[in-house]
Length: 352
Ligand code: NAP
Ligand code: ZN
Image (cartoon, rainbow, N blue to C red; front, side, top):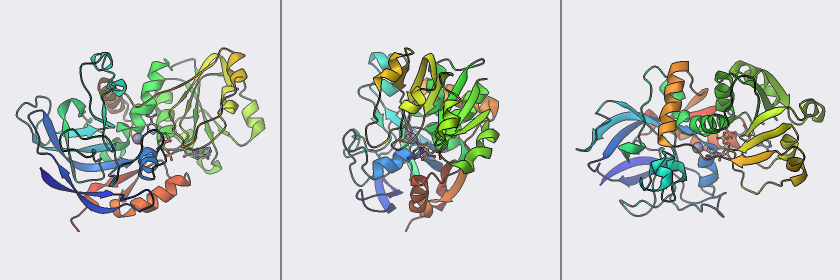
């Protein structure tokens, strides 16, 4: 064991603050990573504030962070894919059983024994896993991905969650040329969804509650922008979408979007608001429409997504912050005031 430094919360009501945590020494299959950047996901905020209490109650202290990019500092004797000095990424998963049908298909996100990067039982040290708001992390190499060297690292970190969470459903639903695709909520996930849907060749329409994001949406790759509070603008798109990706973090009316789907259209929810959303079945019935969900992605697809980003030079649009600004960043995230992802420069984290 060794001591790592980190930022974490000691209760749902407390601000994140400097702390120290224990990490394991790398075992034979482990990679120890010096963390350079960690993206700030809205899930970090939901978890820190225990907003998902009914599904995933938070264990304190909670050290969040699952959009990790860094350099390999140490490798175990059995590690074959990484060497000291390599760039490496870690997303939302740090382990799974590797034997279940989901794992065998490379869909570790569906493994019943998968281990999340933070707030999950830590089978090595006991207690819970601690995430990437820290100077280092130790992860089995199977759960470490390669980060293309041409990408800006601060902007690459959010690919590990916001990137894969939007890429995976777009690929699953075969989004591409000739299709009309909506993206709801232009936050960290949403803006990656726009970039990917555009790169895949779809006609992309952004739905936002923020007038001020209109120009950006077009620059990010949208063909059209709809201010979702404007009923007339919404109605113009009725029954026309093949696919809609909903990346909203809070309570909102999903029936208004189901209304915009064409026959057999699908709306996939990746946003995970605190409270359940109301669903009007008639909206689905008349049009044989479907609503589904999607969690992150497996390791193989995460690597595919990163390679796609390397080839197309895609990264998140980030505001780089020192870790001391994390509480302010959370407040701004609750006001949808982030363009479009905070990325923590971990060089700012020092022993206190
Ligand atoms: P974010 O950066 O805070 O973006 C959320 C966006 O939702 C906001 O920018 C805003 O977009 C919109 N929004 C916020 N409040 C709203 C309201 N009351 N009504 C309508 N729209 C509202 O969050 P994020 O990091 O992208 O995460 C989005 C959600 O996905 C979170 O719930 C997160 O936990 C979840 N998530 C799920 C997965 C998964 O595996 N499925 C992975 C990561 C995150 P506009 O300003 O454009 O309206
Ligand atoms: Zn996330």
